[in-house]
Amino acid sequence: MVNTFDWFNKWSGYTPEKIALKDAETGKTLSYAQINNAANSIAFYLKDKHQLGKGDRIAIIAENDLTQVLLFGAAQKMGVILVPINYRLAHAEVEFLLKDSASSLVLYDENCYDVHALKHKATYEPIAPFIHFVDDEGPDFSEQLLEEDPIFILYTSGTTGFPKGTMYTHKMLFWNSINTALSLVISSATKTLNCMPLFHTGGWNVLLTPVLHHGGTIIMFKKFDAEKILDSIVTEKLDLFMGVPTMLKMIAELPKFETTDIGFLNYIIVGGESMPVPLIRKYHDKNVPIRQGYGLTEVGPNLTSLHQNMAEKKQGSIGKPNFYVQLRIVDDEGKDLHRNEPGELWISGPMITPGYWQNHEASQNSIEDGWFKTGDVAIMDDEGFVFIVDRKKHMYISGGENVYPVEVERVLLQHEAISEAVVFGIPHEKWGECGAALIVKGTEISEEEIKTYCLENLAKFKVPSEIHFIDSVPKGDTGKIDRKNMKKAFMIERNLI
Image (cartoon, rainbow, N blue to C red; front, side):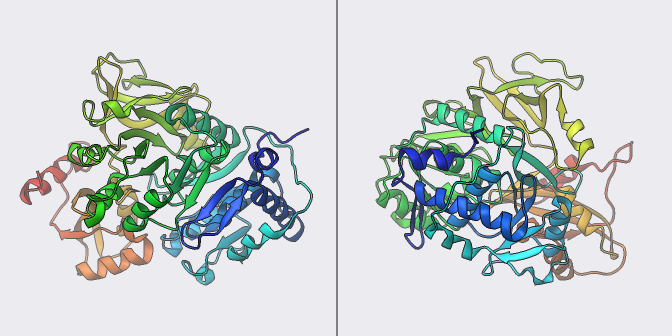
């Protein structure tokens, strides 16, 4: 039987010399034939040297590079599961993910992460040499895969304080690509860049995998750099670009932005959070339409899209569901609500996850009769446009990174000098939001000591920017922390609202 999930094998037959990938830093390019050959060789290597096969997990701790796409190609052929890990995480956080996923091979970038302090028992191997497999041309490697087989385990911080591994399947990959192409008009002629990190579904699945599925071209950036991104948009004459509002704000603040012509872009896709109207107008003034949307790691991720013609009229809306996406807005009993009534957003379609890795309870709590319960509060207006009115629990977004306060609080409360802690997001000029921590001391501890402790146990973007000591944490009648009023009082006191 033929492996129908092997995209590079197909495109190497149709357009073997077509450039699929280009490294923005070095200028190195890879054709579809080169990627296919390398993916075959890597698959044989992983099988022969490491005895890996379908279902085995390979963790990747690295900055964006072309090699990760080669590994993705190998995973499509042999059925191994890739576990991308944020290289900015603290060692304790990485240890948890490696143990939870039971990854037997860890591929790492020596320039951005030191694996020597990790205690997880696995084979550790530098990722860089894998790029040399592009010089090989061996036989095809093909394993029969099922659509429900995972190709990724994508970890998201959660409201429990512990990360959950979303199983992202070949089926999800396919239907997300179809939904994306129908919404954004992606084809083999599409040329774009990726600067979103590959340890997020946004890096892999907002544009990268849909464009490769359709035979287009991706310019790969290691990370976001406003000036280099703007230059690339112009020199490469891109069709579209995807970023979060913080990125687009930094690009718009460049001195040369005003004099640079980017009006040839079909549009810019915005995700992560709502884009302010003044920033939308800055791009509209340069004849660049803005397409906003909504996505989740567990579902899609490309779920809704707001047409560029409605960017200002429906500012703040996530638009309407993509072609093969169904959504409901329900009350606490799961009953459908009327228009303009706020309720929880539920989503269904062929692109929802089968569940969380080795976490049956979380899977059961999140999926009901084929509907994924997002935890986000939404309304649908009279014209069918959807608005998110409250974020998932108490999450905030700092520089495009999701931060769950309960995860930060869990780490804080493990310190013997801290008896109580409450964390929430507050406005930040550069990053959109940052964390503020209100601490009740058990014994004496300084702000600097707390920040040092946090840096040892949390990724830098999760470390609260502000730390304030208080006498007690107010609680409601049931003993629950009154987060909403605590944050409101904090914001009023500092003239933030």
